[in-house]
Image 1 (cartoon, helix red, strand yellow):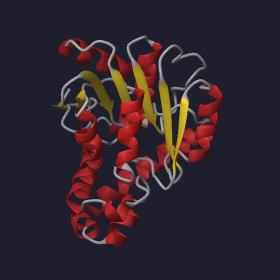
Image 2 (cartoon, one colour; image 1 turned 90 degrees about the vertical axis):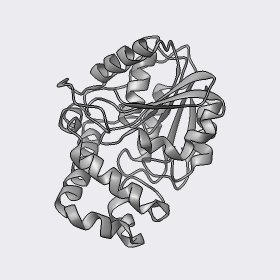
Image 3 (spheres, helix red, strand yellow; image 1 turned 135 degrees about the vertical axis):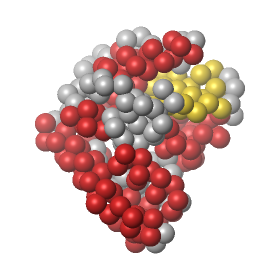
Length: 254
């Protein structure tokens, strides 16, 4: 798998969500790399990692991340996960392969309706990017355009870098792993006791439109010993909305 690595210290592995890539963590990388050997990876079929023909569900992706870390010689790292990546991090914790987990709006705390909503939102975002095609760069240069196209993922889309928005949109459209991951997005559910014995932080943006904030109530019920953090005004990808808080949560948990 493709990955970005920086910093020194104990390992901190960052796992992105469906349709994303390692660059989603860029707003907080410098801060966490001051204390950690940070490894931000591209899951199979996303970013610069080739698709491997696998089923794309959480258990399979956890298998792939495990093999990847074995190749690097990284044992029981601290994990940070976003959305689908948050579920992968919690699954790795269930297997005893994580020292700590910080999950931002993780998949796995929805019901059947919430799962279908999530699948529908990410599919619509991808279809919209494909349909707009050549108009995407022009639209992203304007604040209204970024609000319209990126507001589903970010609480403060007007602050985003236009060029990064274009690259992210194209990566979402081009991701060969999207269909398999989307199909199985609703299959994995968190079960009580999965992450017992390690520090867990669950952080959720109050303006999350992909996995709405109300799902955090189920996370609180199923993970009563975890640290639960409300991220006011943040969207599904809070790292650009509030990089200072997101970096602090990762550092405190690890």
